[in-house]
Amino acid sequence: MVGITELRKVIAKKTNVSEKNVKAVLDAFFKEVIDRVNKGDKVAIKQFGVFMRKVQKAKKAKNPRTKAVINVPQKKKFVFKASKKVKYQ
Image 1 (cartoon, rainbow, N blue to C red):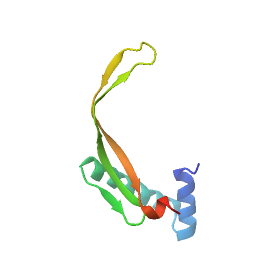
Image 2 (cartoon, rainbow, N blue to C red):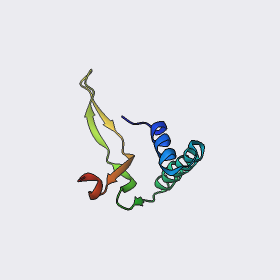
Image 3 (cartoon, rainbow, N blue to C red):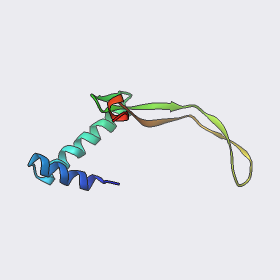
Image 4 (cartoon, rainbow, N blue to C red):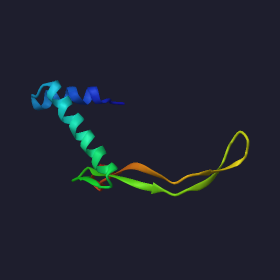
């Protein structure tokens, strides 16, 4: 698995920009995506995908230890839907 530190190093090398500047741009990008999605917007990046919130409906589930049925409340999930270009490469 590749982490953000490794990505920063590769991007810095490929773009001839300092790692510090790449970090600042990536941090700002991720913060903006999260802020926009949390406000209810969809963030679409052409040929990559869409970040959005989806509502997971309330449901009943079973506790595996006690076998008791519990109510799981509705919740909003942060999701990413990859574009066809990403899916089929």
